[in-house]
Image (tube, rainbow, N blue to C red; front, side, top):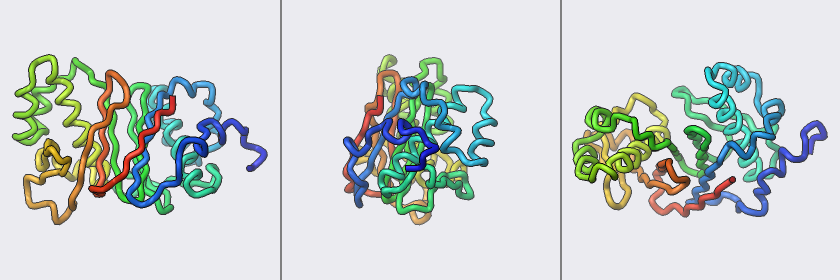
Length: 244
């Protein structure tokens, strides 16, 4: 261990006690409450390279800055755990569409909302999304604009008290898929459906040849939030770790 890095940065999560190495067909998801790591603000000084420091400074709100930094910190610690390396040597790069990568034999994705982060790691492509279930969201207008006809009907059939939950369940699935594929806004949200009982994404236009077969699933992470992950691996073995 390099002497200039405080020991607590490396052993904060005690990953060796909780998390096995990432094998084929495994998906590791980490749900993180950022508030309990407030005392570790100094990780930004040790783990962010110059480009990441510049990106962090561009956030308008301090909470978004802190979530970005914490996400990078945890990602590098976890990737170093998988590779038996050192976090300060992990380099995170951005693809043409902004999807993060590391050059290692792992895929990962990060999402944050309010004080919550969700991170996903796999040996195949993966996307994750977490959203606070804001009851002020105009779910009917957004659903009509961005959901497939099947998804919109599914949401509208729910009773009023359950409709917002249905909206965010669908929304997080769709967002996790978009992030997993890594094409961003190039994929219109209306051209696929995520309400299949077996989790398979159903394409509404002849795009499957381009985007392949994907599966989406919701997660129970914290009351007041909805979360989901997307994977092309139908036989994945899921592990969810709560870092709280």
